[in-house]
Image 1 (cartoon, rainbow, N blue to C red):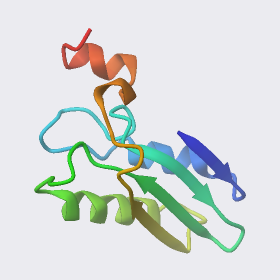
Image 2: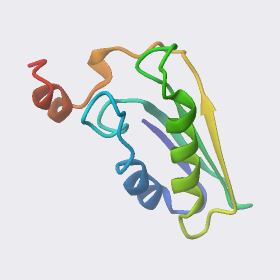
Image 3: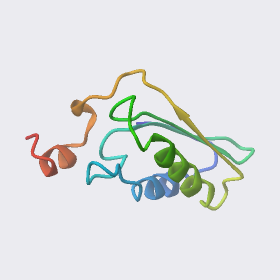
Amino acid sequence: MIILDKLGIADKIKSELETVFDPEIPVNICELGLVYEIITKEDGTAKIVMTLTAPACPVAGELLDEVQRKVAKVEGVKNALVELTFEPKWDKSMMSEEARLELGFM
């Protein structure tokens, strides 16, 4: 995960993101490796660049909305943006060791 944090609140944002779970996989989106970047700017903008486990994810809209809502409630954030990308394509190697262990991939 890349963090560019002009506001000094990336840890708070990451904590919020750790409460967002892929509904099909019982692991949070950070441990799954879905969050590629957390960027904060001095004007209060927080931008999350993330991906999905599959481009045709049936709950993509709900997941992105939840990320936007949770980031927006972090103190210091005036504008929360979520950017979806599929580059690089997500794969199981992007998961944390803990997530791979929990899901039986180790």
